[in-house]
Length: 147
Image (tube, rainbow, N blue to C red; front, side, top):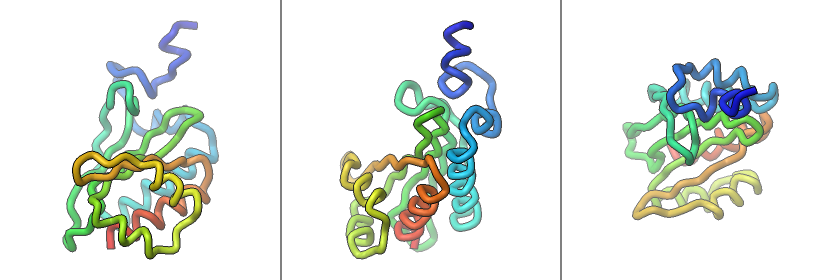
């Protein structure tokens, strides 16, 4: 088995890959979670996906970026199908902190927001997507930030 086979498609920068192929390499529960968030984005935000390789930080990820009509704080959502570490990265403006503070969000999402990184006026948070319950919590966060 070559080193590329051990890494899978997720981190092979120069492979020709589709997001469905990446999803096929992860477990059933994380796949359901990623698909649930993906569907929420499609239905609620209508943002178009952009599959891109993000070097060593995320490998292949499906990114969604845009501005809502209401100038909501949500800036971007990035689905990262890294096997055994499936997650979503969310970027939002500092104005989102007040919305999050007052929202009914899960303890796990609140903890992940606290662990986020602030770069200038943008906050970056990575949330686990191991189960459909994780996905529901992430969708709640996205809903708060996009209203």
